[in-house]
Image (cartoon, rainbow, N blue to C red):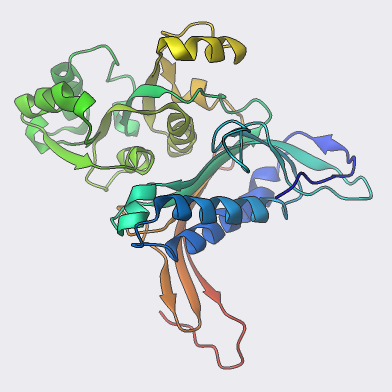
Length: 342
């Protein structure tokens, strides 16, 4: 898609009601992307799944009255044809009507391999805030710990695993053996996995999707009590937006290699060893987080197709207005004899 020529409208920062105004529109963005990627589920074409989700998300964003900037996306401009970092999205009014300035972090399809194989846990997701409300994270790994509201300040990123697990168990009034910790199934986590098992806690290993795992850890009743290990830093920022809306607790530290040094300097990140909390990664005063299930997961069902349309399962959160909504939507095809199914 070529660069659009947009009329010069008056931009404004997030106003009192912008979360409510834009939340439903961003919900539509992730719903449309989920439906398109779900059509490729199980076909073994991970790049195709990601491509159709990205194209659908980009097209829908351009129907939203806003002056949006992608701060976390599909990569640099020379690597991604759309939703690249720095790309401008949204629609402005020819008459100069004010539109909000919004920073947006997207993962058009988290869990491309999960979608390609039909495995659980693939989602489409975005986070949005006022300008400067989301850290422009480099494309590197981040060490992370995510826990729920009851465990705030109970974990430390440099503490032994046994110490953190005992503190989590104490806050939740249960034994360490009752805890479930999600860890990405990667060779780099071999020692972490061994340490967790040595403490007697249970582990749920996942192939992809640590973002959705982080959300599950911050929600009471999912059966997940913590997420530990390293994953993508951009996904860490999006997770932080959700954690803030859920009043959870998160710690993260960038895993910086020599090839990342120059980019960190360009992005203004001076302390590469800094330990971030969710409020540092997503510091915005107003925050929107939206996600839709592509395949079935712990919080959301996957897209379901039927003769007259599709059904989606989503979550939409707003920070300032303090709302967390789980949304089931039926998208009907235009037909005179359409039927709604429960």
